[in-house]
Length: 108
Image 1 (cartoon, rainbow, N blue to C red):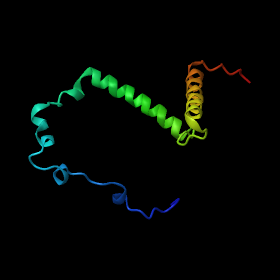
Image 2: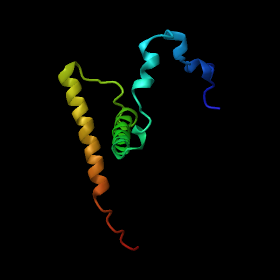
Image 3: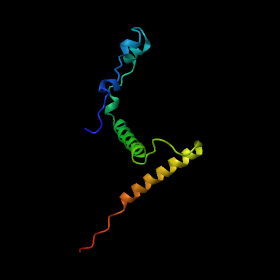
Image 4: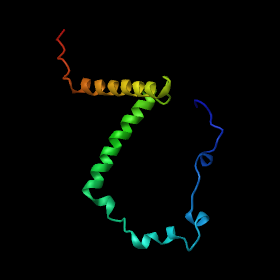
């Protein structure tokens, strides 16, 4: 085992029940009668949106984990903008490199 965790998994998450926080006669309880959201997840627009959101989330995850952009090192708004632009340029170069065909290896 790498590093033992002393915190139980249950302590990392919390449960939320609307019954504990919202009164019985509150407007939030009756909103289900007026808005029908059951068909949204089956539309083509929703599926396209979900796929696009996943792409964006994967790019941000790559920025944070691989390029270590979880913390900005340059000061001020301009420094943060410049650092983010450099990271975005690195991602674009990575995409361009994937588009280039691999050169054939010469037989030995």
